Amino acid sequence: MINRALRIAMNGTQRKLMAEAGFVNVVEKTYQVPCGAWSSDRRLKTSGAYYLAFMDESLQGFALFMLREIMKWEYEELQLFVMEMRKAVRDIKIRPYYLMINVFGQKPEEYE
Image (cartoon, rainbow, N blue to C red; front, top):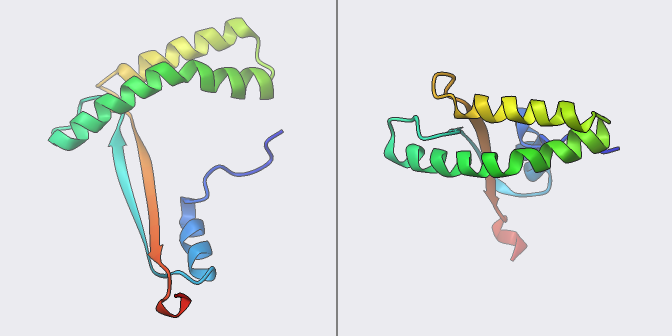
């Protein structure tokens, strides 16, 4: 149904596409963003707490679309899966995180 990769920043693809499009000074930065307030870094602790709140509120919606509509899971098994996922993202022993990849560049001077 979707038939496309949702990971354009992975493996340098977005950086390469931006360079091919004519951008200069293209930079790719990867950050490990915690899911939860487990980081010792104050800023990451704060952003991790916000990300955990986002995940807690969003997991069911993501799962309903992906697993029910696309993968055709039964509603009951989907609910059990979401319950286990919520438990896992709250477990600070696991220290869950996601990779955030930012890619940015500049228009060339001759563009203007």
